Image 1 (cartoon, each protein chain N blue to C red):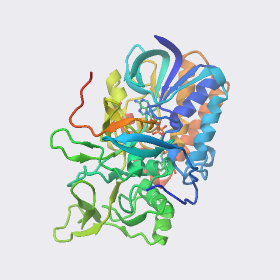
Image 2: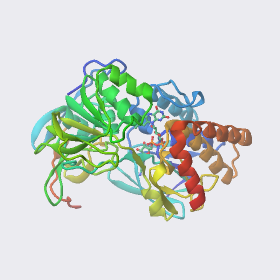
Image 3: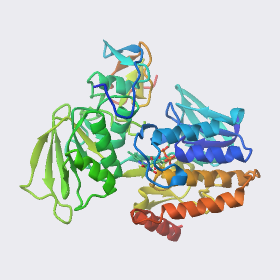
Image 4: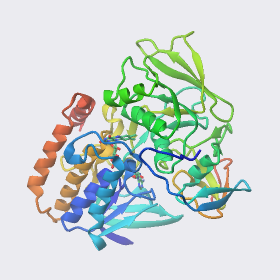
Length: 101
Length: 361
Ligand SMILES: Cc1cc2nc3c(=O)[nH]c(=O)nc-3n(C[C@H](O)[C@H](O)[C@H](O)COP(=O)(O)OP(=O)(O)OC[C@H]3O[C@@H](n4cnc5c(N)ncnc54)[C@H](O)[C@@H]3O)c2cc1C
């Protein structure tokens, strides 16, 4: 899913960033957000709707619509479309509204 | 609590130009954005801009972003930038509440400028919540900022400039655009953009809309149908296309939450995109010392956002007794510039919107 050739932009080679998604180890690139790294790995479903458990992906990519909320390092409702990916992040799909500890 | 002279919420073209005007007036500025980089919508815009020469037309959005940012960074310690910081509250005593890295803190300013921009609208149709249905600008971010394709085959819904431009950029990224559906009988964006994608073989289907998205866990197709003159779907005209991505480009709505939260008067003006704050001729909302500019006060373009931003910065500086060195000549020039930007046939909606707003407030 990464763009290889582009007439205007150049995407320089970036360092691989390991993270886990529901326990499975995957790699994103430096500069990715959590949602972009998952998308590059072919993962479009990020969460489930609260009541009817319908699959949800990102929609707005500006941190506004809440469709991409996931549990990151134990913290629920993280807006993954604007949160930069960091090494060894533990990223999980979110069920329900999440609990504030 | 941290004290700042002026606080700007939103680092898009409007916020950046407001910052520049305040800095030129000798004020200190704290510029806040929830994104990691400043520039707002410009960050992802690889196309040459339309608009006026004075506001960098024929320059790519990403280059304008670099220029606007270096213009404010020159002021060194008088400008403070807080990125990845989400403003969650604005209060009438000019205190704002922020979240950064899971930390909550407050700041107080003498002037607060809200330049939060807009968010893309959605469209009601069956299965519109499936992963694979994205806002067109979101797909633009994914491609041009992160270098990732949204999928392999895309349907674009909406033929405004954003729909047309993003269709072209999808092709530049190597993605197939299978069709572009437009409910109206005519293309609504600029014909230069439409011709470009037509030349590359994309079907622009007028009087057409999406009836539903197909798929269980992700989009696998779309059912389209023809619309009659009153935009009602015609039973029996449906057909399906296999694809994995549906892009929605049906306009933007101003992000007005902070205006409502601070208690400023807000009104609904359809032509300006939705709920917009009532402002006076110095861009001040009905709350003393709280200003607004850019897409947040009406959906327009980056060019007008820049002009409004600069005017707002000058007025806010004036209210803090820090006059801009060329205050009156600059304001006059900006006023003329704005009138020019709003003079073309494509700006009819904006003119109606501003007229309406003038009557209501
Ligand atoms: C595909 C596309 C093509 C376009 N092409 C053109 C063109 O060719 N010419 C042209 O003139 N215009 C064009 N535009 C329009 C132009 O991009 C916008 O009008 C312009 O960016 C509006 O500027 P702004 O500063 O008001 O808002 P924005 O650029 O949207 O910036 C708002 C900023 O506020 C931040 N923010 C929002 N809420 C908060 C909060 N609570 N806390 C902290 N930060 C917050 C956001 O992260 C964002 O960075 C295009 C737009 C799109 C989407």
